[in-house]
Image (cartoon, rainbow, N blue to C red; front, top):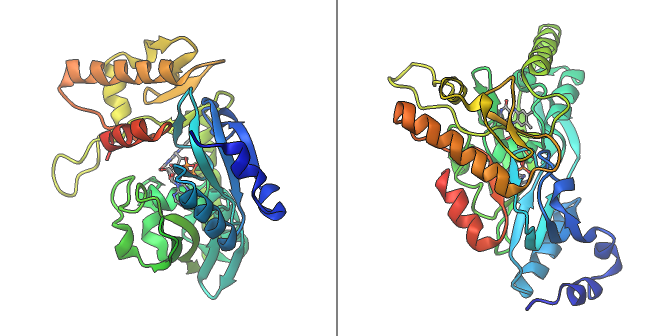
Length: 320
Ligand SMILES: Cc1cc2nc3c(=O)[nH]c(=O)nc-3n(C[C@H](O)[C@H](O)[C@H](O)COP(=O)(O)OP(=O)(O)OC[C@H]3O[C@@H](n4cnc5c(N)ncnc54)[C@H](O)[C@@H]3O)c2cc1C
């Protein structure tokens, strides 16, 4: 049995002030579901990441890296180890490159890049979460993905080594990278953008934000699209939206307790009050089954699980 209080008490004061004990994951995820993280640690710089990781390794604590929690379903029983919340937020411009802390909000990176006279990221306006979460999951929309812009990244491996990573190390593919489940912590990112074109980019940004306001749940907690869109049926063709199949399969009528499919988007689950992880899992299972029964198509989950380590691997493997 790991004595968390003892670990907390043994921390030097500067780290202690960055740690919260038994912190509800419902407060750290946009779906607002999840029991307590035994230790929730705020990583503000590389040194914090190294020191927290060393403590996790020394005490054989399971750890999970969290960004904005906008693509996460956290377990009702919480997480019995260290959740490292990445909050590195530096922002520097050099020519047409940005060097950014991965804990900075993705949308803030978009707006700050435009304010610095650089365009390219406007397609992603309004995507919740951090830049780190976006890179690790190769977030995208409207025909673009963040992986297109990565020049270099600094990460910390689970063994405590600082690595300089290039795009080839990430293996960017549709809503996934090779590094996301590796336990490597993304700390800093260098992005290559375009000088100028800011006025047109700002117009596009406003359009995308309006589109999101119209299509996505504004007042109800969610985690974005639950399932991935389907692979193209032939090279050069577009993906089929999972939401289109889910809509035909009747998912908008589905509900489990306070977990409900959003009336405006058949591929989004919303928390209408006090939904539990169990209810969401049951609902997602019903959505998946309905599409299988009607179309013989097996949907793959996009949202990641945060929970007890044995379940974590099993569940997140399902959606690799
Ligand atoms: C309303 C809504 C709309 C959305 N629209 C879109 C969309 O259009 N396109 C899209 O792609 N997504 C969308 N999403 C999903 C989500 O916002 C993105 O996937 C986002 O990029 C996740 O970032 P995050 O910081 O919240 O990551 P988290 O949810 O905190 O984590 C996601 C994964 O990334 C890992 N991770 C996060 N940060 C780091 C880090 N610094 N180092 C290592 N690993 C890390 C975590 O371990 C986890 O596996 C939407 C979500 C919502 C709620």
